[in-house]
Length: 102
Image 1 (cartoon, rainbow, N blue to C red):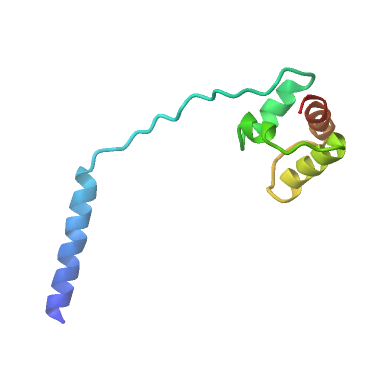
Image 2: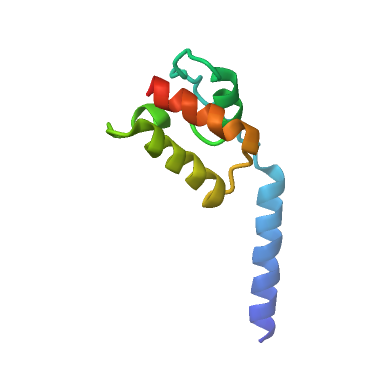
């Protein structure tokens, strides 16, 4: 039993010492190459949508017949399912932009 306790203490001290001397790791994320297409309410879309995903995510959505209904459902899903903090006043602007642009 003493041997197990001593081994545990030794391993804990070794781990603590190793982490104290570990060099910090710095990462540089790549620059964003994609951009939302120009259009009315672009700033509203950038301010709300870019917080969670890139414009590539929007641009890769499948083609649809009723763009407005599709984007309305997507924006509603982002709010209700994923908790996107989008103001009610911005919802229509975002849907209008996405339906007209993508």
